[in-house]
Amino acid sequence: MTAFPSRPGVPRTTLTTHFPPSPLESWDEIGHRLGVRLLVKRDDLLPFPLAGNKVRKLTRELAARAVTTGDVLITSGGVDSNHCRTAALLGARLGIDVDLVLHSRAGNAAQDRLSVRVARALGAAVHVVSAAEMPDCIDALHKLRIDSGKTVHVVPGGCHTKAGVEAYADAAGELLDQIGTAPDAVVLASGTGATQAGLVAGLARAGCRTRVIGISVARPADRGCAAVREALAWSSDDTQTPIEFLDSFVDGGYGCASDATRDTVRRAWRLGLPLDSTYTGKAFRGLTELTLTEAIPRGATVVFWHTGGLMNQLVE
Picture: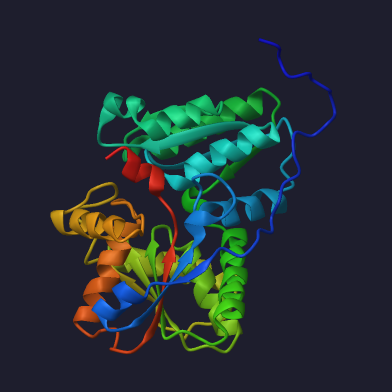
């Protein structure tokens, strides 16, 4: 097999920070069942493979840091993290080394997860540890890379950064351009909180009073609300907007799923809407229950922000 020719000094690719708008789809049948006008913002269909919402955030973050070929990126997340998988793919495209520090309850068995194999195929170094061991592991890798003379960028899990927030403040504007008016509510899976904070900031800047309802995938409400409020402060002086971060659907934590969530995922797939049980299945189950209890009123215009996670469902 002939190897690709190498030309020193030629960058592998140009980092794109602006993408075509992700589709905004009307889902009339499901909306009719729920008693709302349902629109789905398909960030799972952004033109970057299996990244979902994370590609908006990470490309903005890496551009802000002026990451260049030969640098090192260290980041962290759960073993099936969309963020970490996207970091590995961006690293391969940009010619940077990537260290992924992943937590899993499965121990050594997690090494065989499809998401881990994909990250390694992209050239990332994968370190699977317990959640408690993550800070020490990140610190040790950082020191090792610095001592080897590398420029190192440590990006918080989920791209919980100002650049990540700004990426989704801009995405809120993209949504408003597509829909033409402010929706009553936006519902999304919320993890580290930067995506939710960005949507809150962007909608507020446009003068909208849209509710942004984050369905927690793991965190308790107090911790999640604090994280969203922290991220919002990076891009806005707004301290008045209520933060809606609901922890009723975490199903025992990250990567865990109840029968109710799995049933939501199965039903959505049968209707042609691919969800996963780690992220979007929990969020869509939350949306369903909020409409059925009329916590979201009948007749409301609701946007479900599909943040991706298809690969996680493929390993179920």
